[in-house]
Image (cartoon, rainbow, N blue to C red; front, top):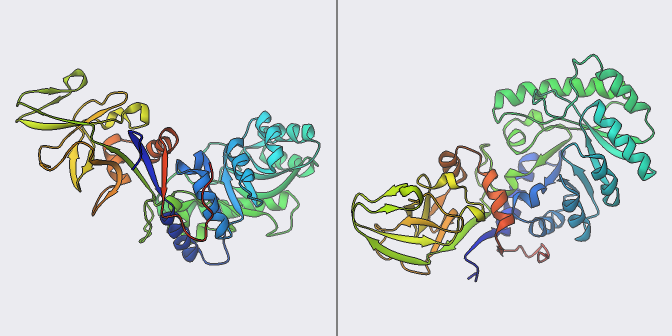
Length: 381
């Protein structure tokens, strides 16, 4: 049992299970890039990387140099691919870790070129195209300057183009299918403009939902993040959520009908009730908007979060759990017995994706790792 008031429990065995399931679905011809950005979606690079390495995954996706450094320090010698456009200073500093950079358009190519000159060696890059219509950091094929930018990249000795990439804006099979078709056509045309032999450059646009829902989107490589951690809207039976957000009951009190609860008297008891204090609040990454909307689990029963939660505490109504007591485990996300708080539950209550919450939980609260596979080394800080 943790000595801290709140913690995240990471099921390493679930991550290994999910990886095996996804690889079985993809088959042996599609390369898998294990996405460990945002400290492995809050699950911890120190936890996830040994599992990927034990399984022979030789490409990982990161966004920060800190993540790349952590991977190299833990002995990862494979490919490290940045999954966003980086600032010049990041590219220069990231040269120590042999990062393959994501080039977000013609002007960004100039930035990476300048960084490569500073490093004194070429940088391996993936050119981002706006084929899917996300309009974020990809070169738009219909821009009159796009072909000129591509020819300049091809002529640059500072840039070694190894891939062409894109990203889907919607988790919708029809949208993914249409975007994948456009990307395949534009990537082939870009490859010709770059003077590369057909099939030489690695083409990739699919993340978890696309890869598991639309096989035609898989191309040469897929970038799998959410599915590793058991959180994807793709129809993928058997995936297991790998995180629980856990605390314990610190105090319980009985209050009469009509009592108001929490800040701004946001809650009110319409009958006499029993309320429990849980030492976890918005400073610990639990969104304040969940107050009065979300549920927790106590002794396997769903109990409502009734107050407009505080910085370091929230209140649950345990009136209908008469056996509840001080010290009992409280699960705010994940499974307790046969009951579970799903990502969809958090999303309905908060109005945003669950990843916005759990990536923060894993970085703001201590981690307790359970079910470490025998094949994976023990995680190191």
